[in-house]
Amino acid sequence: MIRLIFILKNIEWEAVFWLIGLIYLASIDPYAPQHYTLCPFKNIGIDRCPGCGLGRSIGLLYNFDFVHSFEAHFLGAVALILIAARIIGLIHKTINNFKKSELIWLTYTN
Image 1: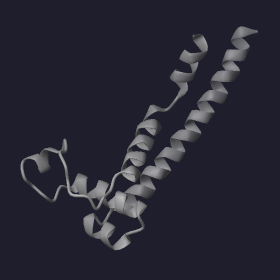
Image 2 (image 1 turned 90 degrees about the vertical axis):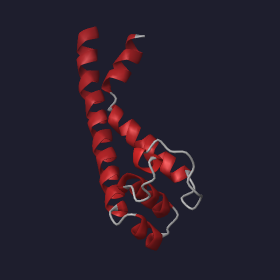
Image 3 (image 1 turned 180 degrees about the horizontal axis):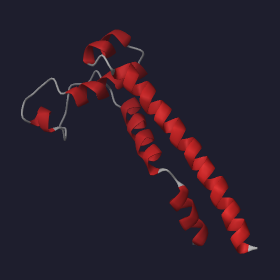
């Protein structure tokens, strides 16, 4: 149990949430008509929501449709690169947290 708490404490959860978001965007069909959404702009009838356009743009990038991706939101590629860089940085931070904590854990238990 203590080991599980040790692992959960040292994980950078932001990276997990970003990864889940990118996996979700990779799994959706950006060409499908829109269904119900939690976006307040879409729900009141505004069709050009910047957030929805960014998500659709990243989904289109996963399908290598660069022209439509740029039309959906011109910063889609930039956002994907920045999110990927953030995930990599957080993974490095998690690895360093485990290394430091493992040293402390080994010193504490011995």
